[in-house]
Image 1 (tube, rainbow, N blue to C red):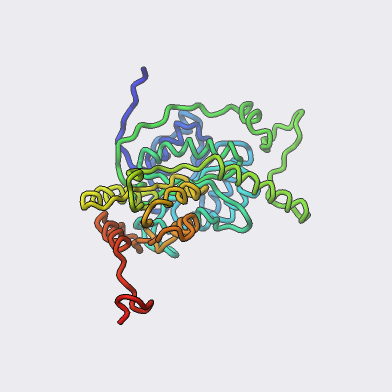
Image 2: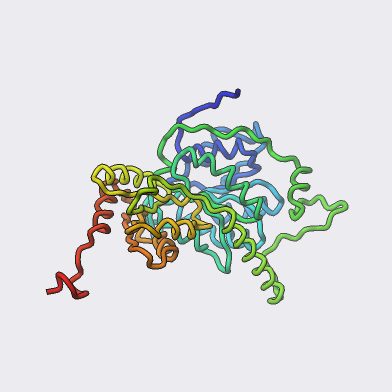
Length: 373
């Protein structure tokens, strides 16, 4: 039995090391805090000398995403990483990837905004990731790791889903998970695919090897509206299949819970402690953690909330995922949101206090009834 190697590292380092081990062909990126360790680790390890993986520091985030587009169009396993304002610059290229149905991986280690904001952690890119910051009707598969181990594990999973559905995928992390250090079991080595394997597995790719093959043109452009509509309908059918088959989530202590905290990423890590503290005070609460932010576990949250008294959404922003939770629950139970802004990470006790407010709301005098006089 092969002994697993356990190592201590940052989340950003885990991303880089997992990329090498997962047979990635190319990384194209530009440094930005708090994710710079991704490209720094790759530069230190020099995978071009071992696995043949190419690592390029581009002149900008815009250049990075279009290098990614070119590599993905050739059927290569390629990725980039950045942080919030850098990913904002990539949005045009991401919508091009989606429109051309190209598999690629984008890693976003979020920081506070808007604008240049702060280098401290945030979850303010939920809308940018799940709604799509580019033009048109498209979706990106979004995975939200809550540990350094998942930072490593999700690299392979993201590529698996990206190639399965010919769709860009994103690992939506944040500065907490990117910078924290934990024990990690790195994935086993996968050799990079040969050119022949790429051609066999990606018949749609533009590889330059056109002998006895139809020349493939990779583009998201179509000038005839009736054809463009058919392309869009095809995309919507694909997205419906992804929603049906690829929802991922985790539940803790939900069976006997009267209340549920919904949180993702680092906020879910904090909420685990909040659940522990609340249960010690006699509050029956569970945790629901969406792992795929798109596709969102709408049906699962709706089913869970049926016999609960209320739901608290904990996220490190002003209230973004709470909108999807409210849509899922559709007024069946009260839904409240708790968040911190400006790069401030909440304490578990703050989430418990928010839960208590949900449990025993203060009467609003402006609405009449008790307490209005």
